[in-house]
Image 1 (cartoon, rainbow, N blue to C red):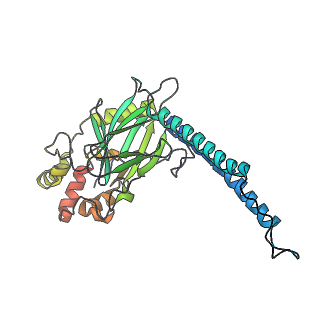
Image 2 (cartoon, rainbow, N blue to C red):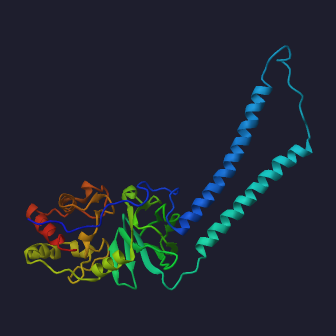
Length: 330
């Protein structure tokens, strides 16, 4: 028997359901403020129009002996025409200038020397996260440190796509930004409160788009250092898992996946070097438990119909051996 190693706690951030109305970083706060401003203006317009319409319906409803006659008509009122032309134009100009200011304030923010750089690569249907300065490659679960006013450490994300259009969106941390083939984009996050923030791909990218989920772990500085240390280490192989490693290396697994320190150097699928440090498998499609991992190895379509990983037609013994090997990859 064997057990899966400890994975990050599943405690959510300040709000379990992703929402732009619970901002936890500077870009999200800017977007939230803009959203409230626009809501106030459009709400005011709705209230005025609805109020005038209600007044007209009640005031000029058909009644009395003159019900069959039209009320007095007004033609060619310069004041009325100026009002319904100038006021909407001013509203649109104000909304445009306010939105442009927020967009440029977010996009043109200077990158401080203390920033954490992460390259995000969207795949069908999972996320690859590379930390070039830390020599770390992981998948589906992004770890970044909390940033404070006294010790700011924002995370700057360089967004790439390996195939089709994707979109990185974690509502509580920032607005959605597209990942377009051959067109790199950038965004940044500076979350202030540790916790787990949820998001997903927000651009239809294929049959399993809805299960291309994102988990952003905002760690305390100490937690982040511990995570980095663990990710930079190569796991010690358990002799009891040697048979599973042999099966893993003699099957097509090595063509798609990477496990540092082994002949597996594939790049089509997620890096599995520290698979057991993740809380989920399949880009959040299922919890990382022995039962789910066994079912995934046997047939990924169990959780993710249309996943590009095929069913390998392995025997039950081979699946158990591979599972025993993967369980050592902490």
